[in-house]
Image (cartoon, rainbow over all chains, first blue to last red):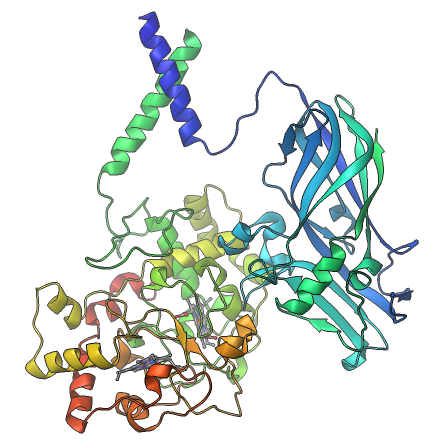
Amino acid sequence: MRTKTKIWSMLSFAAMVALSACHKKDETTPTGKVKLEFFNVAGGSNLNLNNQWYTNANGDSFTVSRFNYYISNVSLKSANGATYTEANSYHLVQQEDLTSTSFDMSDVPNGSYSSITFTIGVDSLHNVSGAQTGALDPVNGMFWSWNTGYIMLKFEGNSPKSTQPDGKLMFHCGGFSGANSVLKTITLNFPQAIQVNTSTPHVHLQADVLQLFNSPNKIDFSNLMIIHMPGADAKSISDNYANMFTITYAGA
Amino acid sequence: MKKNLGIILFVACWIVVAVVGCKPDPSLDPQQDNGGPVAFEVPQGWPQPVYTFQNNVLTQDGFQLGRKLFYDTRLSRDNTISCASCHQQFAAFSHLDHPLSHGINGLFGKRNAPGLFNEAWLPTFFWDGGVINMENQPINPIENPVEMDETMPEVIAKVGADADYIKRFKAVFGDQEVNSQRIFKALAQFMGAMISSNSRYDQYARGTGSLSAQELNGLTLFRAKCGSCHKEPMFTDYSFRNNGLIPDASLNDSGRAHITGLAEDMRKFKVPSLRNVDLTRPYTHDGRFNTLDAMLEHYRTGIYQSATLDTSLRNGIQMTDNEKQDIIAFLKTLTDTTFVKDPRFAEPK
């Protein structure tokens, strides 16, 4: 009887593992949270929508009316080399909605973490898997309905250098496959390791909008003012925004 | 020990699920307004579909919800246009006699509405293949200013305020929340289940029907002259090609190049299925030909030479007048009258 029960429990465990796609966390390891906070800036000043002038590396002045981007598949690397990846990890950061600029990663196993890795954008699988919800809901205006795929980063504004009506600037950067994929996965080290335990450490990520137009591809708004589909232009902006994040604080 | 018992029970439950799951599911029933999973049957000799319902299990309830949405004019801004306004069942869900789509306020789009059937096999949607997954397709007509000109938040509000919809969303999804994902999944259930596989050609191919000598001659000619692109059994290979239409300067439609940005894709369009083709006039992406005869005459004498013209069409397609008539006779055997009269796909009462 006892061995039979053992066999059954082994079988059922195997069945559970096979049948449940979700990874059940180990009940014995205590977990905590990490708070990620995004701060959008333009060089040395906070990013203000609509009513402030900024100057890009090319010397073109411009204003910003919209600045949105996806952060996905966020993972933390612990001091001993283990990695924790957030489940269902899709976040849309929108400057116009300050409730979207921070979120908690939960179920993080307690311990010490030294770096963070995430994708700027939405992984290729979730671009082609049909109707999504939450951050990926197309009602958020970050999905190209005529040319399937997410707008990974959306910058809109105005510049006197743009020859569009009203000097419009519109950089809708997307494209998840091939040579012009804009997907960027970046890793940033914390200035010092954060400790996950009963208290929730905070991580401040600063995103500099000037870096979209700076390097390695310096943008002249009289040459490039509109991007509305995947291609080489979107790729060149993504090569720039891959460098836009810095960690300004990580700690209790 | 008590814990183990729980686990045994859990496994037993799964075994029951597996066994019950093996029993053949009922088919879609037009009379029945509610019910669980239904079988999606791949017609004999057909390839596996692209859309497998894996993350959107086909159910009687889900199908009926999608059907109601498809026929609901509230999906448009002024509540006048439904999907079925441009996709009419008697025309195999194309828009009969409308070269270019005709939407809200009498506005015209720049493309012809294709028939809708066997959508689950389409690797891409639209003439330019811009949409990759069936679930992502409906947002286009709903939000297109010259089609339904509505916003998804408004659609969600209208649908969410209707008691019958609330009941249906609960039955399909477990709770009454209405969101874009659920609307799109329900529409995909309806469209994905619209299989057309019972034309006279199909009956002939299955050995249950026959074709006339003229139709059979047409089939032989068709296989030789047209089959490389309009490949059996779907009557398309789903590739993008330029079949030599004279560019229409007023529409200036770059076709596949609009999506890929590649010069080599200039004015290439998705090879359309020719199933039900006798019902889906007018023809081509801009509906420029009103008859099958005009369409075939194009292949014979009307090919426009350009850099992206399909190489197999450089010299046009040779055919005598009789051969042309035989091919047309064959094309008419692709009409599936069962499908266009199928009460399951008709407007719900």
